[in-house]
Length: 334
Ligand code: UDP
Ligand code: MG
Image (cartoon, rainbow, N blue to C red; front, side, top):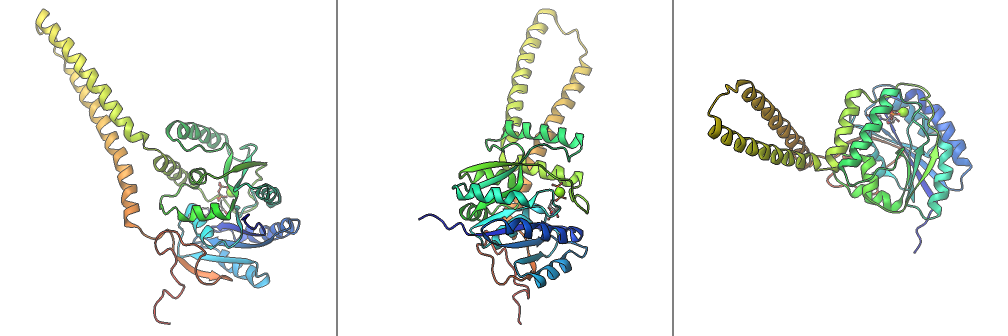
């Protein structure tokens, strides 16, 4: 049975994007009018502190196709996307940023590829001109490291701007991990995928929501959730150093037997102690990174909590693991 390819849910994570909403809605409307699909939009208000939620309510009052859920606090874009995927009802879902850096007009091309049978159609940025030179270099370096350490391959230039078929959405919804690195997860689930090139626009209004600290966390999450090579590195390093120490010991023994003890050897002692302590602490830190993540996972807290639903009722289509959805009245007495 071929799956139906008629309805589309557009998922937009928003954090303090009140200034972008009007233009985004207008651009989406005109872009979608040119495509032969039935569509709706699910905004995920990721704990905004400005007038975003009011803006979303107004949008919904004017056009019921614009729906929203509001999370109880800022859970981060990765989890906001997870929430959107759980609430999406379409035969496919499109993820798009609110700041119009992802041109809505490209969705038409996504739909064409989807109807050819692809499950994942990702937007492939033609360049990183909108990023500064330092961020661009760091991104490049990061993807090299990721490639070297992980068996999951990330297509170059692909981000969150993409279409996922219903079965890809279902697959994403079944991944229960808390430390989510969506870029890796999209590749991990597999399915036929294809890229559609697009040019990233400048942010229309508001400011970028990624601080250097958030970006660093995001980058580390990516590596630690898709590779265990760092753990293996400390074993390898340990073996190498032990072999070296053993060889040095042998050499020293022979030397002493032949020439007697003639060297004070203080500096070498201090240096090797410091060197080894450094390695031990680093290894401990690496183990700690994984342990911390294991701890996060075993606590099995929900990925996010929903504080309010706008134009949407009831449960998400497919919940991820655990009770991801708390009813707006908290499930208590009415
Ligand atoms: N965003 C979010 N939660 C966050 C950070 C960002 O929902 O904690 C949203 C944001 O409102 C925007 C999208 O994710 O719609 C991309 O964010 P931004 O434009 O700041 O990042 P960049 O363009 O640098 O990737
Ligand atoms: Mg942006």
